[in-house]
Image 1 (spheres, rainbow, N blue to C red):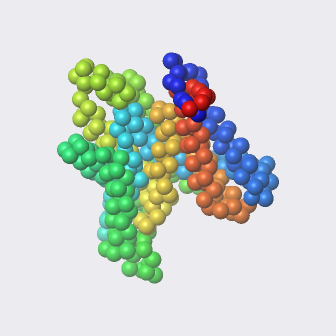
Image 2 (cartoon, helix red, strand yellow):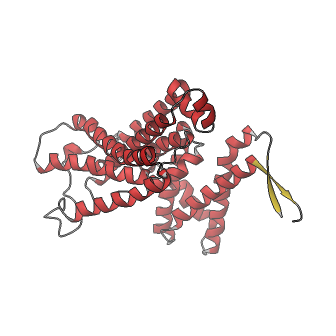
Image 3 (cartoon, rainbow, N blue to C red):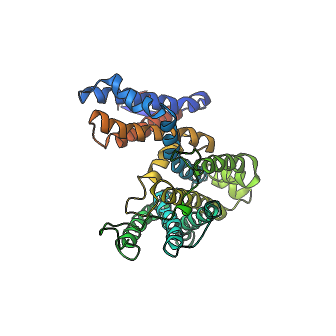
Amino acid sequence: MIRLEARPAPSRTWSVLSPVVAIAITVVVAATLFALLGKDPVRGLEVFLVKPWSGTRALTELGLKATPLILCAVGLGLAFRANVWNIGAEGQFLVGGILGGGLALVVTANQIPVNRWAFFPLLVLAGALGGMIWAGIAAFLRDRFNANEILVSLMLVYVADLFLSWLVFGPWKDPRGFNFPQTMNFAAETAVPRLVPGMRLHWGFLLALLAAAGMWIFVHRTYRGMQLLVGGPAPAAARYAGFSSRQALWTTFLLSGALAGVAGALEVAGPMGQLTPHVSQGYGFAAIIVAFVGRLDPLGAVLAALVLATFSIGGELAQSRLGLPSAITGVFQGVLLLSLLACDTLIQYRPRWGRR
């Protein structure tokens, strides 16, 4: 029988190295899987891990893919630290995209003259508002009726997805779109300004980095952030100190929802340029992995987002160049999360062997 015994003092060094070990395990599993599928493991790892970093265009695409992951993961990391389990960032991402895309659609349909730089902050505010509204529903149900925020936030993802489908199949459908479920292409003035001329990387990437830096300052250098850090792992101590768990609930839900909504608006008005039923590629769910790989730290989330973005782009390249299935990215993301959870378990507990 294997019994887990709590360690008296978990190693801080291994707590930092745990994500590195998890990534290494994922790479080994990837090489083994490539070999089992009849592919050259060296060639497979090169396509999967090296090609996404090769060249200026590849780096800009990597930053573009990492932008929504950073924004969503930074907010989720704050919520998880405060012991608030917002699992619905995907739905908040979608609603933020709906409000941001709706704003761009109004400007486009009515041919309203607007400056791209003046429209950008309006787009960000619309996305943040959409995400906050959707996250606020889960916060209200938890606060008022003590509903489980995990289930509520997760179920709201499907409501948002169905609402988006109704819009693009119905009232917002492009009448000249040959019956495809999509809105008309947004006007060029509503597009997010490009960060690198000639590339798709936009100013949303810089905004995501600023959000991560701002969240780090909020968490580690402000009194309100300290309240959240104390209230999460030690709710009894927080109540004794006079900290409000209700305030922590609303703060973390609204902040994480706002960041996820901004990510959705930037995705819609950035690389997509219109609303379709497939606005998100699972960014809200992948951001949960990013948050934990980044150790629930805003700056760690930036590094973890780049890792997950590498896996995502590498999976697309492996699909087109090596003929591997599209599910390969999800497999490696799952292996990374399970490896991290296993490493964290061994850091906190020592396995003991014995007879029943």
